[in-house]
Image 1 (tube, rainbow over the protein chains, first blue to last red):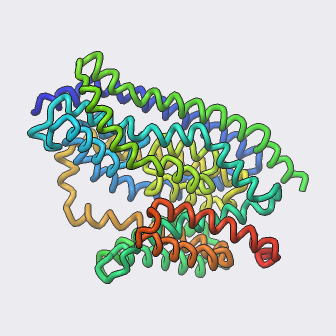
Image 2 (tube, each protein chain N blue to C red; image 1 turned 180 degrees about the vertical axis):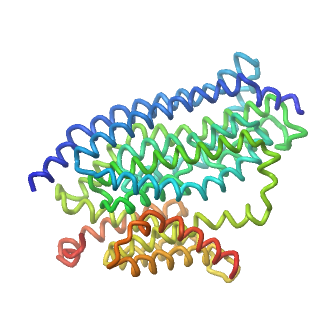
Image 3 (cartoon, chains in turn yellow, blue; image 1 turned 90 degrees about the vertical axis):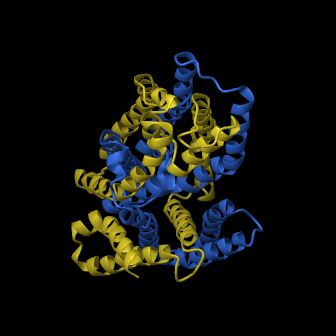
Length: 235
Length: 231
């Protein structure tokens, strides 16, 4: 094992990543507890909460396994603690790999396990942190201001808020989706995946219009992902 | 009507002030806590890169991501709601996990996005995705990289298609939910994206223009009464 990996995989590093993870757990605990309590007071039913939990949990599995496979390369290069923490805390695979790479290059070391040094490893960690705290600072300081903007656009009209939010959500998913569908070409398999996902939702919604089967709302997103994946792999 | 007022009051006077106070505090503590690994590296292992190396690498990363620090919270916040935004950004993996899971949870519960109930269910959806993601990654650490590497290449490559499929699904769900607004948002987004690919503005701007363009046109059309039959 490379020397730097002894540091990277040491008990001390596990302790070091446990601290930020504890802060995240604390935040999730506080906000989730409050959401459950106030949600019930707002008239949200246990049934609805149960549906949301099932739907979100099942939809999280596939993308999380995908993140897991990306974590392997990060684990190999940066050790398990940093990889585990960075992919549950602030980061995403692409961002972290690039940061680690840039960090190593800046101390004049190639980003390969054989040539990595402790200093290159540490600089990679510095780059990951310094490159990513901007998201938390902006969201931490300005989230309520951004929401004020949405409310202002609604012009104090409560009924306008859902329409404005629907417009924003549509704009958001249009952009994410069409970006995946670019370039429009036969060999861009993302297109088949997107179409498969969209088609599944369309058919399920039509089929469920009168039936109102609960399983459809709970599982439709997960089913759509599976169909989309099959489309992309078969076509 | 009375009940609706109460919901709005709980939201405005208790739920949101609490979420802002604690969400902001824990996020900012989270910023400080994220430096803990380099503190340990510096003081326990005495590994400190040269200052110019730290600055050089950080500058490259910050300048590459700077626009996204602002664009992403602005673009995703309407979906996520206030408490969900704090959690989603502190936990990362925004566009491939937190944002879709927020929508999935709200749709499964049958609540409207942008309402107080929407914010509650979004938070639940984001929290669940954090727990599931963490559980799977933790399992991965226990199994070790050699075991995970045994997952066949073809499976790994196929998993890449899950997220585009999920986007397509969420987009269709929204089109069915608000077809008239979709008539504006879909072409606007395609045109914006096409322009961004020519290099006139960055693709990171495309999402912002799509989101705010849709909002503004939607707001104007509301005045004409055309959107009155939208929920």
